[in-house]
Image: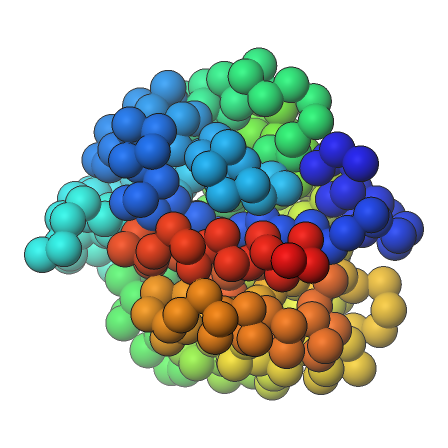
Length: 336
Ligand SMILES: [Zn+2]
């Protein structure tokens, strides 16, 4: 099977020749950058560098799909947020959103008509077109979008949206509406550019940040509307232990739920039934980044025993993650 046939057979609930392995989140690491001679910050900005870094997931790691982009700021930047460069003491990392946030709770945010030609979105779409051309049709391309609650959090500031979600939740609705439009517009454009799967990261909608009731009333319906607009298979990734909301996550229209190992795959299966696919593997911070390949393999096998059907890093890969640790995941799916 080609990687695309393998991935699609799982999505179509058929039997693949082996379990696929790829990331719902960024899998870029410094080791891979050295291998393909493509580095940050250019990989966050320039289409050709972005495509090269994404391709490393397949050419260097052997993963069954590639993914762009590598940060969570494309929609927010195009909506007017100011980027904070991703410089850390250990090297170039992913950009974030600068403080103070651009909106206050009483403001009325607008969705710009020229959204898709703003910021780095044209470079991201061009990167997908380059990937399609370079990789042909055999390797699936995952296009990343950000969920409505998280986009709203970028516009208002995370602390502000978390406070408002308790005290004045109705005030965040106009920001969620902009979040739906932004993620849906980007998702559709990524599909038009050649993406086969859309992965939605909605980090701020985690039960570690908001209550299950807030998730139900102010995150889930907006995720549903974002997914409704997108015609290809969809992954929903929410960070942390999502046990309290995993049943609701299964009703968003996502085909695949991407879980961190701190969430229970067994509970997800129980709550979501057999139609929802589960993706995950080992914790990116505590295991993939700092443990031995042997420990990583054990963690992956345990996740598979718990019901994971697509092996993946549990969240975005820490860029300093050793290459042999990512390769260990492929050894698991290949039975080596
Ligand atoms: Zn995550």
